[in-house]
Length: 260
Image (cartoon, rainbow, N blue to C red; front, side, top):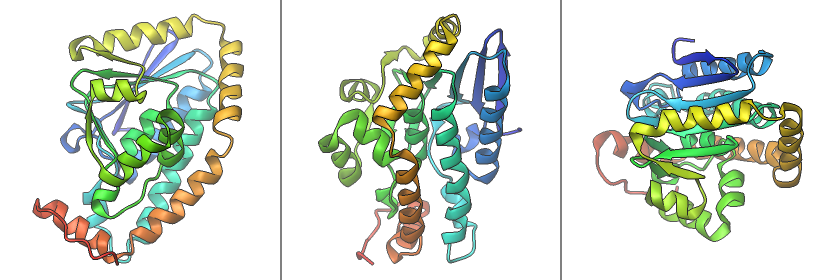
């Protein structure tokens, strides 16, 4: 699991996305490593709480556009494979009978926001930044974004994020309800460890059942929504607008979308 570090300290496991040179963008290897890491801590009876964070200056910048750029056209197959891993990961986090804390140490974009939203609690560094990111390159959300974010902050604010794609700072994310609290960046790891330790010392079975009840009441349609998102992003990957968005991203210019 070279692209995900696992550290177990007593009853708390910390999973660290470890592609700092790529702002922890998700390529196929990172997706597979993170899926395996979540499975490992799920199965470990000594682990009672989990922290997910990123190495370097970013939490997770989303799907790796360089990975998609390197794939042969049509890129639909590449999106099919990567979203299969990502969506299995989102479901595994939600279905894990252990609380999961996101320690958002920096930028979170696209699937990075989806990953954070799949966790039970979100602590953000005061330097963190949030961006929907998909539509700015001609794609549609995946990773449960369209359900998890909309349920968390409401339709109007989620629609603004999807349609206008603003960059939100940590305090804006807090005011919207995207995160539970904001912590000075130098204190984030310590605060996340403190919260996770408190959860790990709690009534494990009751917390697991409470999480399952929240899933049932708020996220009963998540699996279906993930499949709809998967179909949507695969279709978007075949458009001229995505090809333009990809080229514009690497050329560092504004895209000229044609609606095709």
